[in-house]
Length: 178
Image 1 (tube, rainbow, N blue to C red):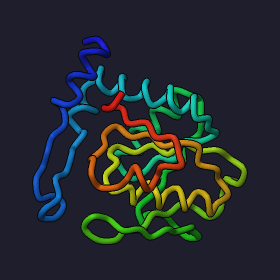
Image 2 (image 1 turned 90 degrees about the vertical axis):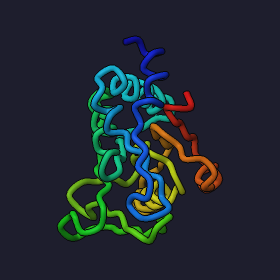
Image 3 (image 1 turned 30 degrees about the vertical axis):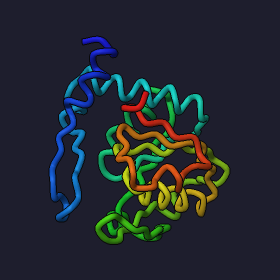
């Protein structure tokens, strides 16, 4: 399958799950697209090209599907990858940022010691942009650690939830928008 066909197939490979994780939310599952080798390669290659354009020393990958994408992009580009974890998954000390979801609140964390982030540039990589809360929180978390966030990359965007407006001051690339 060519990349042109993979891009067309991406929309067909998204699994829509109504009322998950709570009633009223339509969950967009990328698992089938990531399981397809050609579509996965398209996603990684396109995000990698944008990361090079945005400039980065490290990839900030968001828990959990962002780990898959961010790790592949970091490996392809010879960069490090910083796993931005959900609260409670890392031993202390940690830096924490709380944020609002469309169905509640959550928090993200990174280690507060063990490596130096101050002065680095990062591109944040995640699977889906919905309300923008997760990416905004990840950005705030990294900026607290002294990192300059230079861009954002996702595979899908759920439109109409105001995320683009919240993130308008940073370059944003969404694979399914090309």
